[in-house]
Length: 146
Image (cartoon, rainbow, N blue to C red; front, side):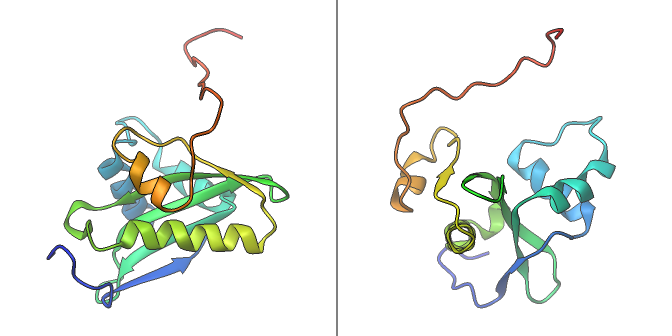
């Protein structure tokens, strides 16, 4: 795709269902899908999201990007899994997905929306209104016994 092309051929939709194989492909593009993951987990992942926005090519309905918010539905939300396939990057699709998710979250009353930005994406999120949070993201070591 041509960099800077308008989004006339792209549609954003809020959904909790989409063909799992297309979502898996987006996770692969993002580097988040590992061999051995169970594809059966994708439908509950979508259904369990507070909001899921899929960007798809209008012509073939194939997903070309996505983002989601996970939330308690009352006050806090986390933006996750923002990805756009490489040939569609540089057209504002990622930005449009984030803005659509933020509008939806604010309409629903969420007052705290956070994310963990990957290196190289800080400026992208700053331009959309995110700021550095005084905290340290942590992740549980799933190899550890509890």
